[in-house]
Every structure is written in structure tokens, then in C-alpha cells.
Length: 103
Image (cartoon, rainbow, N blue to C red):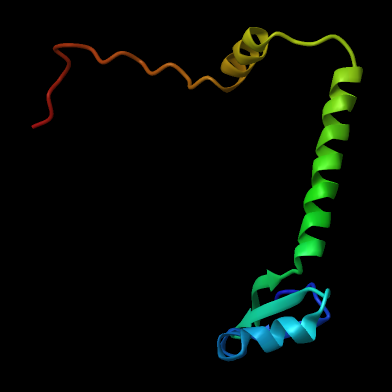
């Protein structure tokens, strides 16, 4: 069974029946929306959703800054050349003209 990552939960049927009541009861708490007792979605208040996005944005900025501060930059051409060499498809043998035909 999947883990429900919220202290409140509601079925999809109940959410369809009375979405305003579900939102009112939830307040600022996240609500797991369940479909056949499995999480199908999570409802978040606008304040919580904005806080999550701000945190992700701050973490992304910090990671980018850490990369910038870590040393000399690599050229895009060099990175793509290395990736191409590392992940290139193996060369296929050329088919020979005039080879035996299948009967």
C-alpha cells in the first residue's frame, strides 16, 4: 500500500460532492485525495504551495551558485563532445552488397 503523506484525507467522491467543505475543513493542512484508498492527488493551500515553490527556487539558486563557485566553467562544446563519446551508439557493420540471399 502506498504511503499517504498527509494527516487528512478525502475520497475523490467526497471531494466531488462537497469541495468547499473539504477545503474549509482542511484549512492550511494538506489533504490527500484518495482513489480506491490510494493517493491520487494532494490539495494544498495557496500559502503552502507558494512556500514550497519558494523553497525549491531557493534550493535551485543555491545549487546553481555552488556550481558557479566550484571552479572553472566547462564549454558547452566540450560537455557535448564528452557526452557524445560516452553515450554514442556502437557503429553497425555495413551490409555487404551481393551477400547470400535468403531462400
